[in-house]
Image (cartoon, rainbow, N blue to C red; front, top):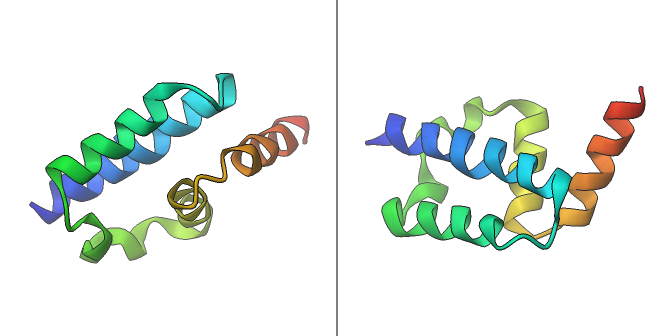
Length: 82
């Protein structure tokens, strides 16, 4: 359960959300990803594997939690320009 939850956080919530945000930060898909995570793993915030995300993914995860989509877009614009 914990491993599946972690994979969902990593691939569905973080990776897929970032891909969508880079195209359209107002897309309804972002909310659907978050809803999917909450509906299927209501205790996801207590997942013991979250500490394995690493610094960059943790930053993105926290920005998603706070709905700071513009900040995520800005981070990736900076990254892409380097």
